[in-house]
Amino acid sequence: MSDLGDVFDVHLHLSRWWPDLPRTGYRRDLDYTVKGLLAEMDSVRIEGGLAIPVYEAPTAGEALQESETNARDSGGRLRPVATVDPTRGRKEVESVVHTWEAVPDLAAIKLFPGYQAFYPHDKALAPVYEYAERRGIVVMVHQGDTLDPNGRIKFARPIEMDEVAVQYRDVNFVLCHLGNPWVEEAAELVYKNANMYTDTSGLLPHPNTPHFDRTFARSKTVLQGVVDTIGATDRVLYGSDWPLESLATAVALVDGLDLPPADKAGILGGNARRLFGDRPRGKHRKGGA
Image 1 (cartoon, helix red, strand yellow):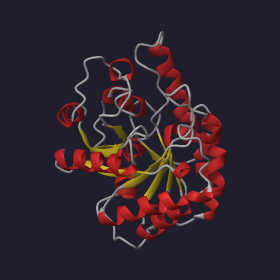
Image 2 (cartoon, helix red, strand yellow):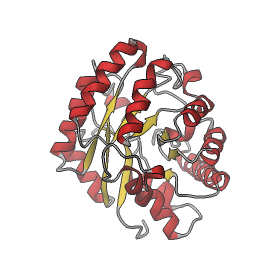
Image 3 (tube, rainbow, N blue to C red):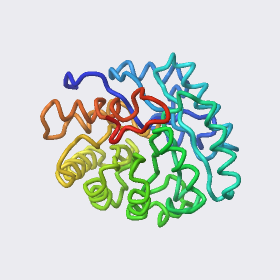
Image 4 (cartoon, rainbow, N blue to C red):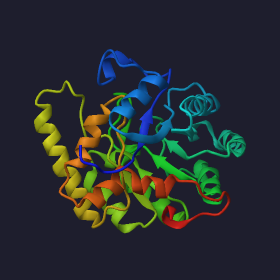
């Protein structure tokens, strides 16, 4: 790997509710603990990352509590992320959002359309976006394919985010997984909307997939095309989607792009530190700057 400075992974999952890890994880003997994750991060010189909860958690409160615990046990290298299920109704959403006031170091909010069958412009989510605007917190939205075959991906198509981006111009959104397979659609939304970002997670299949090397090369071409469509790299963020992919492989995908070292360093860490870094609560900073 090139010397690209400190890396920050915006898409890490570490949860006791993760389904069937031996089958879905990139390695059957994966050490699925904070200690194991930090060891892998150290091996690739990854400075920190986001501890994103999974939608399978019994409640939004338990999901956040687990993310906070992971962050604390990591010595602050992982940062907590909250989630909420709008299909439970607006009153439930308002109740969950109220609890976030007690989490001063909350880094982001993650939504799971496709898995939980709602559109991101569902009116029940208004309290979430208003809260994110008031506190200057990033909203990350699952986009594209779902690991669960029962998911309904029509809810997770990037074009459904355009309305939200226009309505909430002072909220920064991350289109996770580049909207795969609607990658060009996601790239267009990032190009059009200054408050839209995307992350590099979700392009690579399981490492045991036949012809993985060929798929890796194709994914690198796709990612290069995303950068070319957007016309800049400052709103592209590195994410691995660990434990679905090894951190080394996910970093190599970005490191192999035909870009100046400074641009690759931005994708791998600089852009994320600007977007998720410490900032005054209650005052939004456009573009994370």
